[in-house]
Amino acid sequence: MTTDFWFACIGAVLIAMALFTFIRHTHLLRRILAFNIMGSGVFLILVGLAQHQRQTDPVPQALVLTGIVVAVAATALALIIFRRFYQLSGRTELDEDQQ
Amino acid sequence: MQFAFDSMLGLGLLACAAGVFWSRDLFRSVVMFIAFGLLLALTWVRLEAPDLALAEAAIGAGLTGVLLLDAIGHLRQHNEHSPRNHWLLPLLCCIALALLLILSFNARPEASISLPQLVAESLPESGVEHPITAVLLNFRSYDTLLEIAVLLVAAVVAMALNDGLAAAARTSTEQSNRDPVLAGFTSRLAPVILLVAIYVLWAGSYMPGGAFQGGAILAAGLVLLKLADFHIERYAESLLRLGLAFGFLVFLAVATSVMIGGRPFLTYPEAFAGQFILFIEAVLTFSIGLILFSLFNQSPGQEVPHDN
Image (cartoon, rainbow over all chains, first blue to last red; front, top):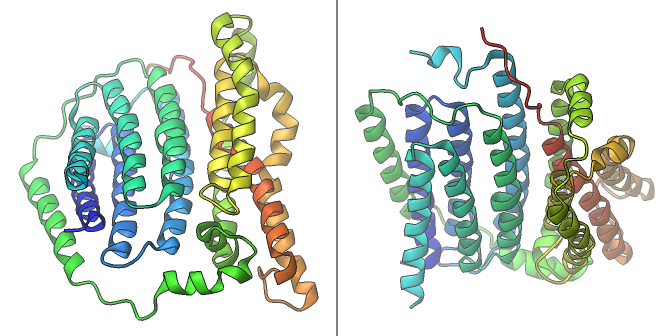
């Protein structure tokens, strides 16, 4: 098992764990965290699998670099929307998720 | 030895993720998330992607951590309701998903062309020596152009959601409670941060580094100045609005101006490609730094939510 393949597998497990949290937890902040880690898992698969048994590949690395910057912008926007929602309603969960 | 290090690193990533997902306290989750980001930066080094390691350390661990901590600080109670009761079916689904993903890795098709070889062959024409910068700003500059557009849209939405009254109230109430140690430290650190950001930008043309990493470092410096109560957002208000769109507009202007010479969109003349790329990168660094800072700055304030 090469380093690249090992980290691609870690990425797959991270995605599954994040999906589980996403389904099970209703707190919006926890979901934003899960969303971020799911993204990191996808990045690991992208780079790890592309370089598995091949040479270092700058193209997926450049794509992931773009992805990291877009992910932080999306997270910041999600946090702003979450905080506005909390400011207006005082709740940390969506209506549909309240039991 | 390397195998042992990789195993520990991978298990550490999983352990940190487990901490983020299943610790009771949200604050602890966020701290685990920052640790996860740092481990991920190390992982990128192991995957021979130093550019990603730089970006991850500055953005994933640094900037996202600050944003999350800031959001946590404004929540009144950190404890959440107990999670949903049914867990068996989601657990089975997620285990199946992980297995399917890992199995599918073995069934991937062979690539018909070798991208690294293609990049290595065309590198002399790109105007820069570092392959990732060449991919980002020459071979696949569409991605970068659209990325800065996405960032701009995020910043505009953030501005639209922010009510100006709250921001005005915040600046008037938060006067002169500046921590002297933090302020003194930050005022000495700020020029160094700026210098590092410019160095990383400059280094991007021949070694790992570039506009994104430089922009992230710049944003981190601005966030630090804001946290130390320097009220830079007041000076920056008009400059900020100009700077946010500046990167995108200049990039678009350069991309379209080459069409006057009869070239396709976004292809630089080979003789000047290096200068074009450095110019665009410099403007992008400035804009990315400002956009990321403004996403932090636009966060809704800490007034107590209505109880209804």
